[in-house]
Image (cartoon, rainbow, N blue to C red; front, side, top):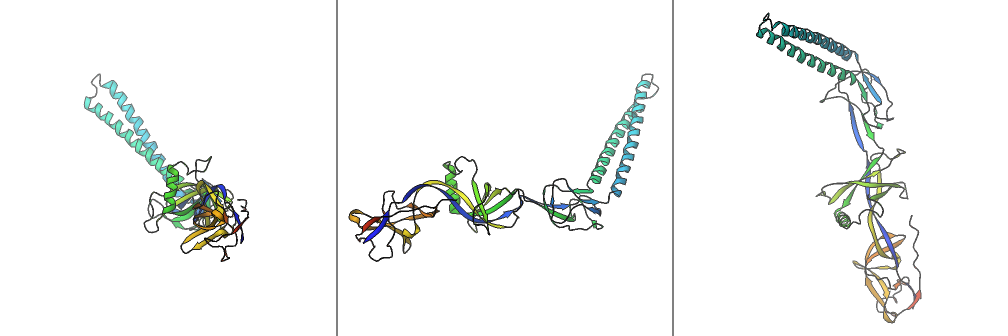
Length: 352
């Protein structure tokens, strides 16, 4: 029986492993006031993009302005006391020589000067604290990102401070953005061995590249690189959390969106044949090759991923083997049967 046969295509293959994951924000910050008071003004629209330092809320400044004026008055009073104490000490230094005043009185004057200077420092600290509280009445964006809707309207009384502060809004940074996915234990071990051999990073790159596509996309248009791998595998799922950093200059990607990622898994020399030339034999995968005297032989194989439309064969084939390409459904083509080999052709598709 005439049957088409061909040698497998030998080619250097770049392996990309696929995983599912979701986008996550680079940073999420809850906006809370550091001081209490009535919300006076609102400076943003719900959901808009804000830059670092942009004003968001203004709290009633009047009580804090009064506190600053009071602290300034206290500092002026303490400064005057310091000047008076310095004058008394300088006069005492001149009088001590003529014994007009006693040593004890001179020591008292020096002590009063030290106390006055300490009180002046305390007044300066109180003034700085009052000025800081006044500054905190302007609530600004700590980072660039998209802000949520406002949780408090102008006119409401809010609680500030380190504990129990009122939530005002939330800012999510999405430029760039993270893509988080889970890698199986077997793949993680393979990547570790590749890293030890120095073959983990792609040729000409010091990072591990990834390609991402969204649920409604057919091509892997988005690119990024792995920037973090967790330090422990999950004992429940047997996977390890991995994170990639992806550019998001157009701000199209949103945290929580589902996607598929291709992770660079190394390069190696491989043999390629079409899937149609592979036969299932219970739990094994086999191909038919032509032996001596054109007799069909069954060869167990270990399959790899699809590359350029062809199946990668990891083990079981040699580059000079002649693989049976057609006629596999014919009961005449079976191990031990003698056939008439015809020259066939294996074509690879261009890899996008």
